[in-house]
Image 1: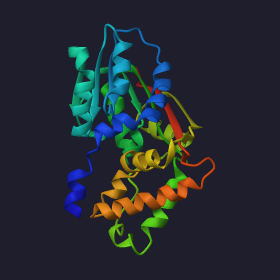
Image 2: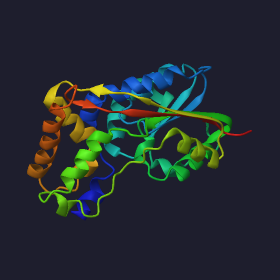
Image 3: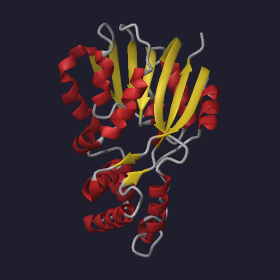
Length: 267
């Protein structure tokens, strides 16, 4: 079981993620709308996923260039297909976010729906700040505060039942959801200036039990499900959570919260 987790912990079902990630894309478009671009910048998309938002960023930089970075080979394969039309204006790099291998390389860094998957935010933001040129900017958003707390509590309770507890004995949540104040302190410790952070609700209602089940399985709880050794157990786990979600008001809703992050590298 441990070997399977080590092998799969980087990977996603990228084709299904690309199809289901409408909520993430809608949030990301709001982040991109906040950018004030000249059009010739070199920008890092930190956690580019399948490239849906990367494409919009490239289009906003007619004389610039984008580097998309992700740890998942599946995501990068999908991104290469999605971004092929842009040729040399976009390049893709496989890397963990806390080990970004660039120094003073970017005018700006954009990230959406990625930073909460990194547990060491001090190392993350230190590396990102070093990747920026002097006065380079960071504009990002990730999960924060009480993000999907109802689902997380239900998953914890279910994982503690006799059917599933043996498989979750050493499991810890794979996310870090900071609140605005803590995130601002982390950015300042990393050397960012002109720091602004805020948190906002982003409630999301999915279209019935089938979409909810697939969304939870592929996008939210895939790290949880890697601990279960059979497809039957994984199906049972998601089915129970879906049954509970059907009783919510409104049914099949997710209590998403987004943490907005902004800062600059010093001169």
